Image (cartoon, rainbow, N blue to C red; front, side, top):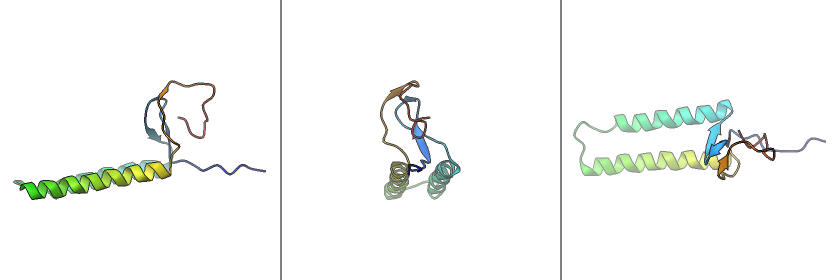
Length: 94
């Protein structure tokens, strides 16, 4: 009988706190996120007003929150790591 473990798009980093993409879906998520940030930046006019800056920052904040929601759904819980340990789970830790 096979155990039903989720397939993560991101795994915990070996050093520090955070995640690393490990599947094509994880890499695609980061590429789309980067493209959305660049597109938001190109929407700013050359001499933006303060309301246009506010709109830009709100868009960037929404894009970043969306990235963290996706990572939260498709990765193990983060915790501080300092190198590989024998107790590491290869399905969760990079």
